[in-house]
Length: 264
Image (cartoon, rainbow, N blue to C red):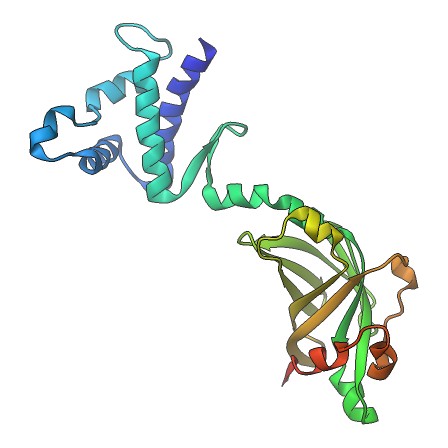
């Protein structure tokens, strides 16, 4: 019985959602649904159409009486929610008892991929200033710690503390946004169709970054590596690329060739 009354609630909420969010009157909704369901004239007697008076009866009802029944209520729900899904890309969420964006629902399903990145990381970018000054390649190492999707901290040699957050872009990319009073940066990782368990077991990732900087804006490639070291023990410093080459073959060339700098 409770489940049957839940159908009546969904009819009311569907019509309310359409009116409030999209300015669709009940009459307009019924007309558009019926137009989509019309069949060739010779099959017109089997049209799957909604009657305005029938929909109104179920919308106003709080119990099944006077010829109202759960089977018909289910049919109305199915047609209304099918219309909402195909027209506006929203779907009914049973747990929240509201209509949510299909994209929002997809994001929830992939939240575990964000949580698979929770860890302490050593991060590396190409240091063009030190490389130019000392006439040899230098790579800057800095700290990155992801404590939760809502809490990310980062330190570099020039900026001792960034704070930030992490969020999904679509369902196959993650953006780490970090910021300071005078600086903001975005790190973007594309993990494609990888499952959360695979992300959790991956030790090294390459990302693209955009950094507003203090004196220059830049974008390029960023490498991060999981570490057992504590966040405080990671040294924020630029090191000669040759020193890191024995630990990470090919890293310097990969980072050097993927950096673009814009002077302010």
